Image (cartoon, rainbow, N blue to C red; front, side, top):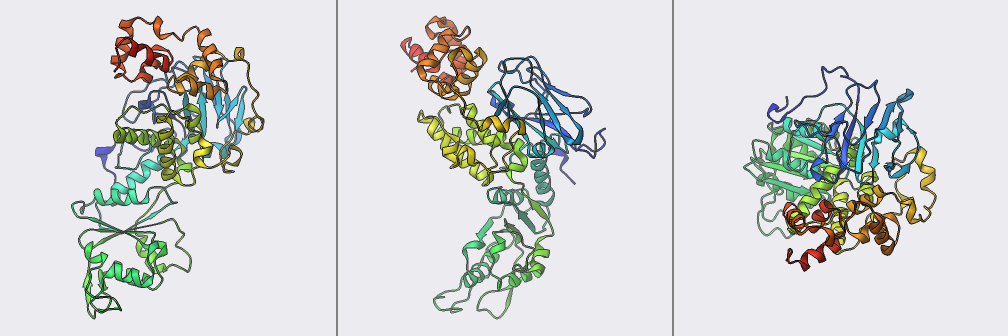
Length: 507
């Protein structure tokens, strides 16, 4: 039973497409960060899905929908159509908008294989917006649980399971790869449960040997072993009436596993060196990234822990959540630093969306923190350097369009300036906070060449050509954030900063 107070919509049961996966589009990246995580679900699978500047309508759960709305997206639609054998054809529009599939630019229609769609297809539109094309088996749902981010069906389901088990006294086993958020889930179960006013006692079983584990978990009497100068309470005593989180449960020494089984079954345990039993009402939550079904782990203990199991999915299995995680990391960095954050280059965010993240959310968060530090220092964050891989050395499971794979292996030739269209120039500046150096790096040209493109552009303006009243209004609207102001005025940020300072409009 799920908490209806946290539900705007319900699972797909009862709809015309119940029982079958639904094709969905999730906004992975958008210049308006508030749009990230919005979704569109295809109600009529027999019809082609067309994506343009104005349609379809994307929405957060329970809110009204809007088109993508950004000027970099063509008014002419990009077309997605289901083909035989579970394939999906993608036809770019007859426009100048750049279309990328899994990080590789395409110029003609491609057919995507079912395995690619299962991993999540990343579409880049106009070098400004990223969409994830994926399957889902439920409608968007607002069921927030602190720290557990995501709009994917998998994320929604994990939160539902947590809300289901939290009010009970059942032991919980959390399974998942490193970095998927098992400890975050454990803390959420505790916080939503009946023991929220009591402490969550946590221990990592991987750092304890057999003697230490027994003493830490169950306590010791004075003189129980050499060096035991005084009696000491164990973690089960400390967590009596509260919650005990046993992280890395798969590393529990074999001799201690039957002791854990006993306390889980009856609440009874014996302090090391004592001759009588004690009782603990601690609720146990355990976590592991190991397969516990082998002979090395006590199977009776496993059966006891398995009374309620929650599997935390890897980030590569819910690619549609990557944008939400990135936005959360940006918000955290802003709350800590206070200063306005620099814009992340579109190419960097696209690489994040396409990477498989073996270290999952934890690894992505660490990479983003380093990227923001570099960006704040005026340096361009390079994805390959931060992740520690070469472009050609990305995981074999990285979803790359078969139609685009061959061109990606060929080094791009240097383009002449007259080969760049107006949309590309504006998009590159948008992606880099209207910083000329970052935009030039994205386009693969020199800074002087970038200035030539700006001078020749029919829309980009010189700051000194903008009326002072308009400058004042834009500064007020952007909260004196020069990069945001530059985006509103369509003018390079560095030149704008110098100009408004000269006018005394900026401290």
